[in-house]
Length: 86
Image (cartoon, rainbow, N blue to C red; front, side, top):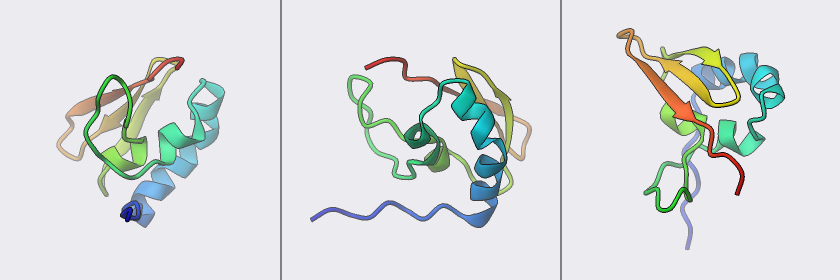
């Protein structure tokens, strides 16, 4: 029995959708952006997507081939690093 992925809030979805083409052009996969389930990361597998890491009120900063910045309401910047090949 599997649990369904948590729903992405409309505010988070709008942030991702607004920059989706830019992220895809930088080499990010659709799954890297929209996977909303967060779980234990082992050997670079089971990585959460950007949607799982964002909260309403967060903004997206730089999007590069190596990372995507998440800017929290507090101003703290987190980076989601690209998983790379395989």
